[in-house]
Length: 396
Image (cartoon, rainbow, N blue to C red; front, side, top):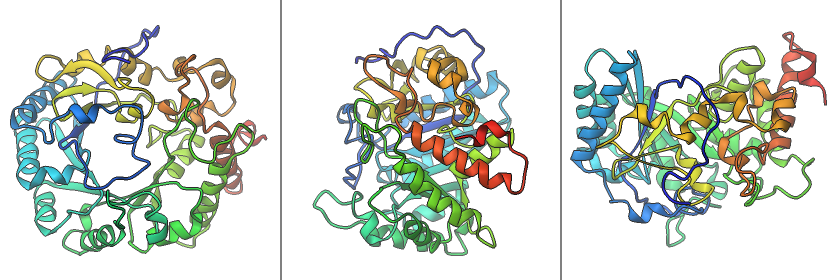
């Protein structure tokens, strides 16, 4: 697919403004993780990106963020430094980006900065910088050395575990603990779930986000067979949910589980992977291109592209793109199977990219439909011991 070729949207609705801006400050990485959706899937556009975001692009992005926040009178926005590996951009680039955005946006809108990193370059200089700007730090780790090294390796095959573990210990220093945003863990069915969870707990993260490996109907994730009644990922997550839910004290937050619980009780979701809420995120690529959520790079070449750029286009123009509209259309954007499902208000059709099939595009249930159904109904039954949950949610 070419830039901006996302299928046209038939929906007519009032879009929610963008409140989360994912800035790709560096387009390369110092690891070669074989499950990475940026480098190892269908879209290879990273090869055409400059290595690092130039000051001019940072300045123009800051102007567009300020313009959007002012027009929509936004009390806060979130800016996440991302990549590739964002720390490869260096302390000077990240300092300039944070200062420029805060100065340009002004005091009318509060800015929450975050960074998602593999942690290998997270030394005291970066931590001092993040402390100065209040940047929340999320680190990717998939479990113990054996579990993590199934996928997260250097290009020459060396383990990344020791360096990531050192970064987590550094982040847990009392001086920097307040910056610790959490751990992002990609699920691998080959790893024992409770063992993975308890190993991650040893770093005392305030939150853990379990990420299903990206795949879709044309390129299913590992372990998803033709038997659509099987739910290996649901069972894997249930093992962790039970260990987490029945702990005597809360040891950490788990974003996916808390989002499902909130949705079951009529509240909002804290994750774009479940629920029918409007997705209010836009991506700014290293060259200044405005793109849809970067997970769409796992679907097809050009699927995340919009043809827009911070130098010439506003984020209000981005909100008129068919892909942005579809991401905010909620129930209207789902196919008949999902719309008829009794748990659609909780599942929300799952992650948008996981619904893709070449012939029917995004009108399908998630490739993880059976897993999400099993997990949601399991959580509903557990809650029912303490609270009243609508009976149809718990029905098999």
